[in-house]
Length: 330
Image (cartoon, rainbow, N blue to C red; front, side, top):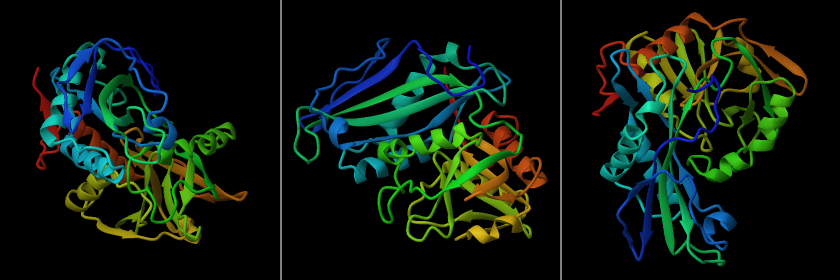
């Protein structure tokens, strides 16, 4: 089935839909994982594209859950709008995602809180166009793959703080677009080559405050409060938003979105990375310019409770009072 790591896996069906002459053409489901694209396509030369990341979870009863998929649809529209691409309605997005998941049910790992089916909706600019302008046509697709954990599970990992920037101030950091990630590949690779789980970026304006990881948000716990960085360059994580709700409603924590200075790191009792791929990954230490900031030797009690609550909702183990679970009807 899948190993306990992220990677690509050939599945049975992929969603393909083209946008031409101002309208969407009929979608198709195909077993062909390849697409034809013009060499002069805007997505190849100028990065006109956007994507989403979400998961399908197998419940104990064999049913399948998506987690807050309409939030992904909303964020996808926001990204497409920023990149001057056609927007996808909730109905179109949900059809594309649910039907692709349903056609690949045999690839969804059996119930296991560390396993799921990763779902990647995306859009790219296509058509012949070498000018710096929006593409004449577009491709909307969905690809899925069974995956395991992204970081080192429940172990408190060590992370590296870098001086490189993920996104520019007032740039595209708020949107889920490829340029934000492509520029971080080498930075993440170098961090992992040095034995770190991932690279944590500082705010691009001043380099004084913690921002986010290459593919995850950050939160910290102290004084009965859930802290998470506030910045104009951070992608708003659906996972982080959920954790804030659970921290407040279930655990009774105060919620504070604020700038978190580098110098405040060791004042926190707990810290963790969070996101669709990361789930909730505890941070043991953060290293910046050879200085090691120690936080915790293991997953803290609040982080552990939050992660369990998140997983229990995603996998349908507890009553969902928020409407976060979306049951995929087979």
